[in-house]
Image 1: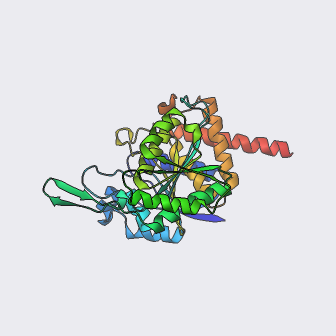
Image 2: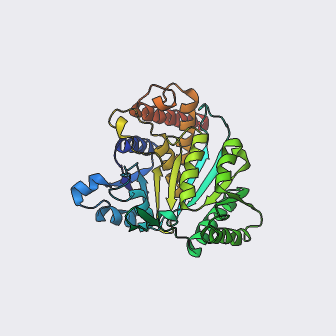
Amino acid sequence: MTHKVTLIPGDGIGPEVVQAAVRILEATGVKFEWESFAAGAEAFEKYHEYIPKELSASIERTRVGLKGPVTTPIGGGFASINVELRKRFELFANFRPIRNLPHIPTRYPGVDLIVVRENTEGLYSGIEHEVVPGVVESLKIITEKASTRISRFAFEYARKNQRKKVHSIHKANIMKLSDGLFLRCSRNVSKEYPEITYGEHIVDNTCMQLVMNPYQYDMLLMENLYGDILSDLCAGLVGGLGLVPGANFGHECAIFEAVHGSAPDIAGKDIANPTAVLRSALLMLRHIGEHEAALKIRNAIDEVYRDRSKLTRDVGGTAGTSEFADTIIRAMETQSAAATEEQA
């Protein structure tokens, strides 16, 4: 079977780390047909659109995408490509597993958290305007439909994957109507899953609790802005954004992406770490049913990080992007040879 996948290399280091991930994916033996498209400033130069119609049509056709980082201008310019794609394709669930890699020194070994973030509303609805000069109003939109939908996603994942606890993260002590509605929806859904422990923590207290004792949490459920902030905080627990994967799920399609920035200062130097986009690609493999290939890559990543001789500079090594990818591929080939010998 050949899997058709929409590929968005992105900009900055995006094309380098995405190409490394593509080489590793193809080395598993799984067949892919890539439909590659630019997005953001590069796309605007070519098509006068930040998200070209051809890209949208490809996602509608393939229903699965792999995406590198795309630069978002700060304080002006075009809207976030990430946010726009999530809205356009109703990718309502942002999913970020937070787990340690072997031999990456962190304060907390053995972290195993899942961050589930509502992806389509909240302050990221982008509804803002200038009331009078010097006064800007932004609207935070919370709906029962979206809050219930993301809560059910979290609890369904917990049930299917033997997770034990879900904490709903909020600021309902201050935003009693908006965050209060989110909490009520979470509570109502939790009643359908009596085997899963349900808890609630205020978002600022959660930040403190995470840096004091992340082990008390299993799954964190929250609205858009809190999820954006806390998922980055959680990434810091295991080594940073260059190591953690991300996925955006909707009912019709899914896009898998590295959650770090485009790092234009190191673009083109063959030194960027492709681990985040590669681990995102693992989520994609599982999503399309290629579990054996996902396990093969996961074992190779663990082996390479355990060995430490061919890591990239950001995690204490000297290898470049391409050399790191070559090392992962060799580790997979060694696995395959060992498995063949064992069967013989």
